[in-house]
Image (cartoon, rainbow, N blue to C red; front, side, top):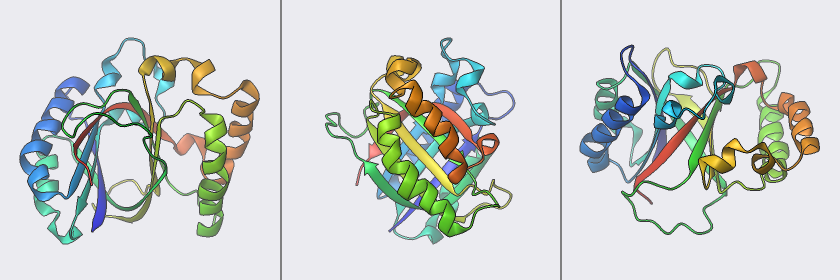
Length: 229
């Protein structure tokens, strides 16, 4: 099996809530019958008045959904891209390798039910100044263990390393990261989101080992696990 991730972009007249509904409907009708597993993250939270521009990075507010699915073979993806393209300005596709450094410790809701909590989605390319070895050492070997100190209240951490960009013209992301918290209120409270001011300062110095800050794309999403492995 192979894991694919698609990032959809809002059409000009779309709002985040309408886009979320359209993507979820397309996922249930067209993607679910074809996928071994399917999770849809939708950016309907972008309409929440508690969120400020500073909570989004780069073009994060233009990302409408993140669709993660497992297929027997990526050659079967054409109907999926057609369905997502019909409800978005574009759908950027990536073949990824998935790691889950922090799985859910206590998931108690069934497939198909909206997940509680909030997802922080972050995407970024590999800086040209770094070799592959330096990039993965900084991201996987150094940042991943440190992230447990940085975010002690985090609930889930899914790390997708991009192996190949599937759709022409898509951003050359090398990392698509999903981190989840039990509530938006927890995420919005810096005292709960971060371990300490000292840890946060260390993070700001550490990020250069795997990413350029101005290349980070960040948005907040709601999770729907339509079919789990």
